Image (cartoon, rainbow, N blue to C red; front, side, top):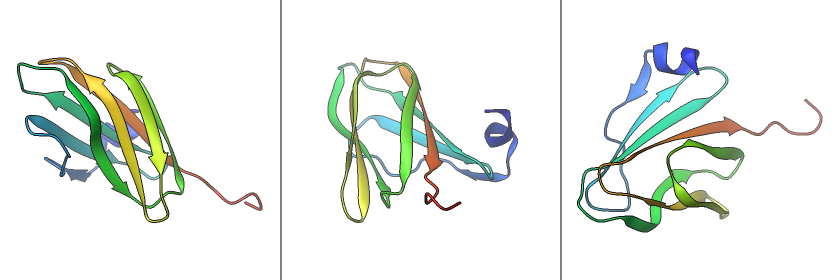
Length: 100
């Protein structure tokens, strides 16, 4: 994920759905990497992050328990469990139509 982390297309502190949850976005041409950090003293469970659109695949590559993705018409909801003072790393890739 070197290209994403070395990109200038970054957004610190993107909105999250839980208090004490911090997220940063790093995007390259081929993928977006989102880092999550639970700054609290309790495990965060349930909806953590909402991303616009539903035309992407999302993979938890590090750190989260009970990870799941719910795709709606206009947004994707990321659910999971993140322990106190723990990190997670999500890789988001845009799905290409079958004819590409």
